[in-house]
Length: 580
Image 1 (cartoon, rainbow, N blue to C red):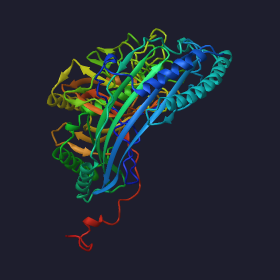
Image 2 (image 1 turned 180 degrees about the vertical axis):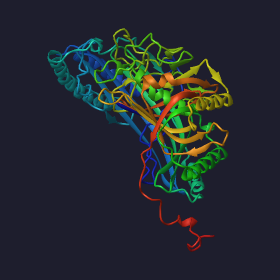
Image 3 (image 1 turned 90 degrees about the vertical axis):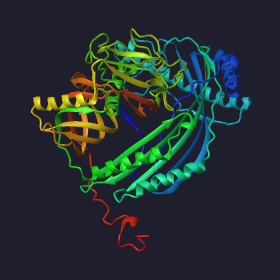
Image 4 (image 1 turned 45 degrees about the horizontal axis):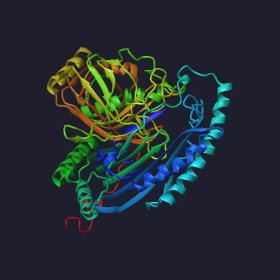
């Protein structure tokens, strides 16, 4: 399968920044179950479950598990482009997802059938915003009936496949895990945003981008979101908790003389509305983006290269997310279509002994900077857990949803999904630590030494990235790609670093991970969105700089369209009123 990580979703060809991926980051719920009364939504879900489950659990075939989830989302979005307002609005919606599992914990309707998608019969449906318990119960009742009927049909296909297809050792694991029920009722969260100041700010920010004649397009988007999630299931779990997230995204596009698109991004994330970035901070970021864009327009292209490279912390964070993180997701060890790179390597060394990796979605921030992958409970009602994946280079375990593996029977709180998708094991806050660190100056010196030892004309410094993707399925090469935005040549003779463009980092995991020889002493954070089998989910990756003895880069896909023939109207000296 192809899994993809991005700092944002863009619609470059039009003057709109598409906010297609949900921005969900969390404030911990503030009250326990004893401190707050049941919300009406939760009451409706519980009442309908108590009515429905006793009946369907005795049906033929029986439903052994039912869960209800309602997400109540409130969102405000303000977007501007090239000095003008694009859109400004607010919305609220509720989304219901019902899961009925037919069969038993060992074998049910979701069992993997090679060549077919797992059973997830409906992406859900919207429900009323009113706290009207009878109306909510009616909508839940209809969706439950629809889901049960579809699950019965899916179970028939599963049992047929058992008779005609070879069953793998990994497939002998149960389809669903037994988990302890959890109860938590927190205080609902909400946002109250005055859009007018943000309308002026996005105008101001994108006008600053347009001051450069190199700018083809610029977009600034502010998003505020409050998400209240309600979960109940037939095992006894009852949850209500809220999550708040604010984000400002900046984007500028230019085009080099040879037709290559030059894109630069930046984003600010915060939870407390009082922690919004100041105009001074945003304008400083805009100046940096413009300087880099102007430099990249003139920068030379780099031919394919393999040699020493230094990745700054943000780039290293995405590198670990793509190269290691996706292959440590539990469901990939179970499906016959997956490459199963690390499935048989628990207890073996897969990384240099000075590196350790954990995934800890319970962490809200690091050194005062928000971690986007935080959540208190996963989308299957299991509390988020700190999971040590690699300890001093040795693989210890995998990220687990409620889909067990042979030898790993329980979830560790990593079942995640975008609305309308089935939860699977996904990353949250992937955090890399090192016991072999050195300051940046020493790391650069070691890079130059490696360049000389390998008789290379230069090394590479990967300073910023857009994101990346990886192929984990058997039908594709077991390869990854990380997409740099700012790359420098570092010369062994002391010449200043040279800004270059037109390269993507490529490689295969088992080889690439062994090429890391040292790390920096300061971790950096990448906050972004990861798209995979269960949709797009918010993630963070944290890593120090890494020095790699051999990194391969290939030519970047490019456009052959020439830059615009005419100068921008505001920068045409012959245009009427141009100097005013």
